[in-house]
Length: 338
Image (cartoon, rainbow, N blue to C red; front, top):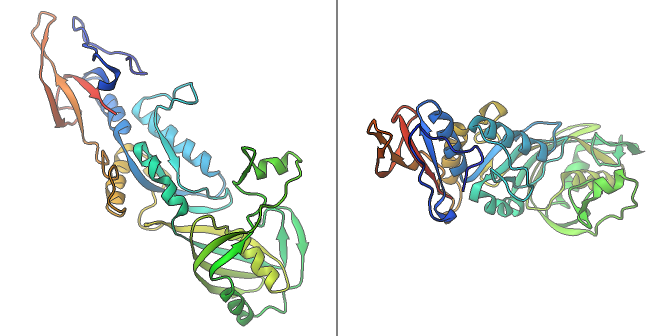
């Protein structure tokens, strides 16, 4: 098989192609292009989970696309034109609204198989709600649909109400959400003018819920919850329970699974192969021991054949495994496996 960036070989040296695609690709590396090729090899061998910081504005999918694009450009690779075949396998473990910020867990390589556990695992949020105002999206990005008085609501009322939203509760997901009908997002259907009915209430878990600030109309909540939970629905339901209405003013995911915003989430200027390889190692230690969790998280090695040019257009070499730096050899065949 030929790698997407083509064959590179020195004059007089004929590449030896493996007999079976299962054996991977052999690519000649010269001192001139070695750094780029090693970056590509290292990127394609990365595997595991790591968190990034998602800012307000872009969708989770857009953040993922930007991250993937940066890594491919650094490695000198291009995405396959065919949708079903990806140069770099990457995904995220739980959508954050475009208006929200915070921890977004990313899976790379075989790490994408672990993302379902991030979807169902615990998460922590900090949100600012606004009493007296309801919108169609249940947050500040939507159109105001209702306004009600809130002067009667006290801090004591709020704290007492929060008790009824702790533990196992029933929650109706927002219409504007990542949930789908017939393979299409409900939010997209609504924007197209399609009549959409609310999904039925479903059980969700709130592990902890506390009021950290109360300055009407604004109030701040710290939330620890399980999977499938919508903070926007919680804030809206709290407003109704207080004989008013409410919507989300600001939302930050501060933790997902074992990964925290302050300690682990990589900012955009840290989205490079070396930093992510280090993050994968650190994050693997935080995850339960499973086959594949730590596999190739380091990716400091590759299999290769060192070529010694005899000066007559022939080469001699032996297959080795080593941790190599760009200046360690002048010509080698890399064997990319996996």
